[in-house]
Every structure is written in C-alpha cells, then in structure tokens.
Amino acid sequence: MRAGNGIVSCAILAACVLLTLPTVHVDAADDYPNRPVTIVVPFPPGASNDTLARYEADVLGRALHGSFVVENRTGASGEIGISFAAKANPDGYTLLHAPSAIAILPYVMKSVAYDLDRDFTPVTLVGLTKFCLVVAPNLPVNSAADLIALAKSKPGELTYASAGIATPHQIFAEQFKIMTGTDMRHIPYKGAVPGLTDVASGNVSLEFADLTPALPLIQAGKLKLIAMLSPERDPDYPDVPALAETVPGYAGQSWQGFFARAGTPQRIVDALNAALVADLKRPETAKRFDAFGIVAQWDTPDQFRAFIAAETDKWRKVIKAANIEPQ
Image 1 (tube, rainbow, N blue to C red):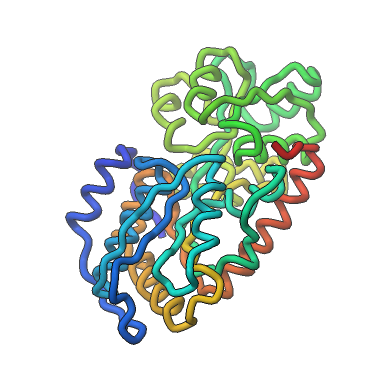
Image 2: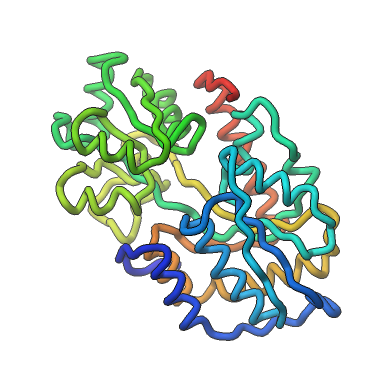
C-alpha cells in the first residue's frame, strides 16, 4: 500500500492527482446524489486533511456521477467543523472528512457540541499519517535507548515541542514518558513547524513530529531522526528503527477518515464506502498519498467503527494518565 518517498507541496500534489485520476464506476444508491454534496473539512485549505478531501471529492464525483464540493469550516482545533457536520440532515448530502482529532477532542476540550457515536456513521478509514521522533543536532543521543538514558539521568531537564496542547505531538510524547518512566517538559507551539525550527536550533530537545514537515530538516542535517513511530519499520525508511523496537508496544500514528451523519441510509453509506475503497486500493493512489506522508488505508464501516473505539480508548487512557487538563 505504499511506494516512493518524495515530498511535494500539498497544492502541487492535489493538482497532479486531479489531472491523472481515472474514473471508477460504482453503482449509485437509487438516484443519489441528485444535488451537490458538501464534504466538510474542519481545517484550512492546503493542509493534508483538506488535500485528501479534495481528492476524495473528485473520486466520489466520478464514481457516483455527482457533484461533491469541499467546504472548510475551521477553528477550535477542528471542533467547529465537526460540530457543524454533526447537525446536518442525515441524507448523505453533508459528509465529513476528519483526522483522529475527532476522537480526541471530547477528552481535551471542556465541551464539544458533538458526540462521535451518536452523531456520525463511519464510512471508511482513509490513511495513517507517518510520525517520527527527531532530536536537536546538539543533543548527545543517537538512538531511542540513548534518549531514554539521558532523560532518566536528567529528570525534567529535557524539553519536547508540540503543535499545541492535546495535539498528537503532545499525546505521543506523553505516551513515551509513561511507557519509559521518563520526565520531560512540554513546550507547546502554534503548529508543528515552529516547534521543529526550535528543535533544529537546539532551543528544544526533541519533537514527536509529522514526518512530512520534519523531512527537509532531517535531510539538511538540522535534525537527527531517531525512530519512526509506526509499530514496525517503515518500508520507505528500512534503516530507521521503529520506536517499538526499544519501547515494546509503542505506536503513534494519527489517522484520517470519512464520515456521514448518523441515520444516513445504509445504501448511501455503502455506496460511498465502495467508491472510496475501490480507489484507495489502487497502487497509484498509495504512491500519491505516500508523497505527503500518508499511508493509504481502507476498511468497512463496521471495521472503521471498531478501529475508532480502540483508538479512542487508548488515547483517553494516555490523556488521563498524563493529566492533560481540558482546555
């Protein structure tokens, strides 16, 4: 399901994708869609979440012979767009493309205006975002074992950057601390890139980061790549250990998925799933996703529901154990 590791901008990638996308035909559900369908994206244009949604809009339009249009509704770490989609009519004409934040926000925000189980019907998992562990070039470590030893010898002295409170970057770092018995201080930023910049300059010790924005700094020698957070070694980076090789059971990957409003007719959910899965299985799609750090994935609605339940339970426990206070 993966190939290639060239990094290109999301905008250029999206344009290339749409120019080369083949037509995939799926039997429509009765006359669905007979008017434009809105795909809500809870993050700004240009982000990987947005780029994938625009790609999927074209896939669905070709497969189901209709108009699928992305609408960005941003703010509150994604909660505004998710809550908007949660109040839509359950007719299949308002859909949601959301990352794993949809399952985490209820535990890190004081209140959210949606209930994932009550308000949404999962359609399919779409992809997993690659994360890695990078450290400052001046930090005297070259492996995860070195990092653990250093952190234990200097409790509370090492620092880690994140893209903000309760982002995957923080939660993955806290999971590491819990599983290794180490103590490091959290330095939150407004986004992953500013944090990476400070790690590269040596002002912060490390970051559990998305691979895509970290890779240019790694290639330039400004960050040391210590480990991948996938459960096993990434085939694209076979020489980079998985963190689980040093910390058994560790895994940190955020995901992206497709949702319909709860109560949407099953025939429509099944049609959406069939169209998306048919394309996600294509090797060409896997290559395009991989170009910006996403591993293409797919499943049935029931499998996606079970996956979400397991992920939610896992990260809820980490959030509680790390004493991350709702914001």
